[in-house]
Image 1: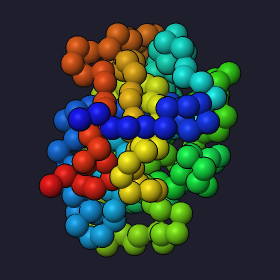
Image 2: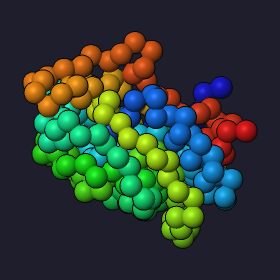
Image 3: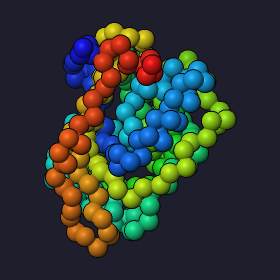
Image 4: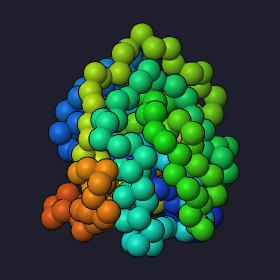
Length: 215
């Protein structure tokens, strides 16, 4: 069943996101299940990625490829290691609500140079975040984020839209575009720019699952 969405520009949020390798997903899913069981209703309302910039329009492929190479250069050969969970807020409006509030493990990433399409970039992006309702308090850190680290990651565009069904404040539909992988080493000028087959699209859960957890 397809998730009904408010499919109009004023309801769409365009993001540049960091996508960790799929090997990270089991630990991230375990963390999100724990948050949901502890009463965080929006634990499954955002894809398992880290938003790094708010955009006025999706980034061109060439820009994503260049930014992926630049991020690897800035990172060197070190791994990306999530830290303690914290809140970050997307400025602007989504579906008539205030800024989108996200809560997840913080990534200590170097700041990328803004693209022409960039409206705002996060200094401390969060990975696989839960969505917090505007009236909801910030969760404490009794549930520790997973102990993971990764080098394999990609940049991509993501479009997020409020769903027209489901619980308000937690129900979103999303689609992620082709992945542009960070080069394996800092010395590689440009690499892994082509999306991997069967690994370049993340779609939202169907309407029965959006913002409600999994089972």
